[in-house]
Image (tube, rainbow, N blue to C red; front, side):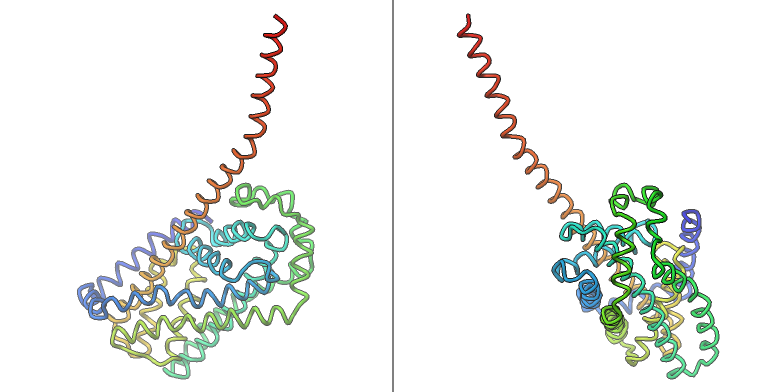
Length: 351
């Protein structure tokens, strides 16, 4: 899988360069400069969809941690998955680690993340289908209904198989002896999550349809709100589109990025899809490419802030742990020193 990602990187860069040359970087930069610093509002705006996503996780986790804390973990999870050269599930491993800082039950934390990923898959399929309907309804491109619809149906068996395996139970208990070999498993503590307990926790969550529906609705609301980034960015760039158009661009861009998982950060793929979809709604090529670059800019800025906050939190936690360890050792050291002093005093008396 690693070689596939390294192969996808130059392909993505080549696509991005081709788009820049074809669209004319001068016109693109001029469009971005015309919008000005108002585009920076897209960075804090992204916090709102993640808050809704974190609320879905909050319900699955049984409200064991505060919503604000889980929102912060969600920002770090997204940043790790999108910006760092790790596997697509790297963000989930980080999420489990950070959630364990507040929730001691490792099985519950792991199960909540796994079930949340399943819910996210379902949301992405429904969101992509909604985007496809919006495109056909507003642009009349009926041919896309067959092409993209077939692609969605062909990719559907994989999440269905995963759901069936999890629903049958015993999956993680069967692979428990190999858990230490999973990517970053030793570092993130995967081997300390009992397979049988994890299977039981997952089964408990999957047996609560009302809980799953609630998580689905909150995540779906977050995806819908995320389309406001496209809507506002194009409005600032001087080429507004309808709400349905913004949903279509965001939905199918997300779907394409998930499909191109082998390209690190979806570099080039995301930009090409954004340009293609935006032009379907009457946006000129320069503005469409400006939108793609603005979305990438927001992703990098927001993600870097999240990664920095994560590293700061790790350093503070490690320093606090070291201080607590030193504080715990001081009484023992004092006891040893006092014992040595008493022994030396006894020797002096004996002489």
